[in-house]
Image 1 (cartoon, helix red, strand yellow):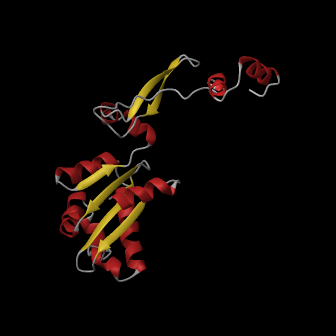
Image 2 (cartoon, rainbow, N blue to C red; image 1 turned 180 degrees about the vertical axis):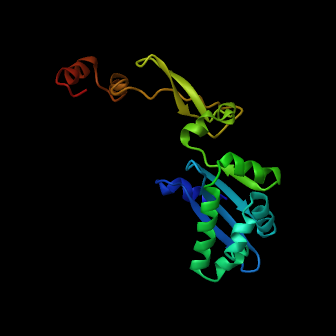
Image 3 (cartoon, rainbow, N blue to C red; image 1 turned 90 degrees about the horizontal axis):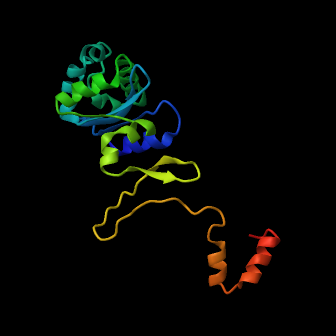
Length: 194
């Protein structure tokens, strides 16, 4: 699923989709993103033993059988076959909301997940619990800002994000460390060099 998610993430245009039919002609699997009826993407990953049961659970078996597309291995025979399978799945997933499809697959212990927007992801409770999204106070704006947290957690070295220095905030300190005296720094300030 990592390949599919990475492809979807970096595509940088709507709709967020990507698909990979992998394995062999005899043992084909699929990792793909499809859009629901609202254009919201969901990701699925089915190994060869789950392909046919998933089609039945989703109610896709009959429509796919009517087109002769229940054998995922057909995708290895030609690009046209692969495109027909993916286009048919795309049309079928576009008939309901992603929560519906994800629920059906997860109830059967199959891999399915929403592909969240940045806003949806930032509202996920796990994001706050794990400090992936944190809030810091910005004094110039007089409000809290949401920022991304750090993925690394160390017991002896906490990582506490803060505000970046404002432009020129440390000029005087740095110039003093470089050997400038107060008069030289004032002169630089007077000619608008700092």
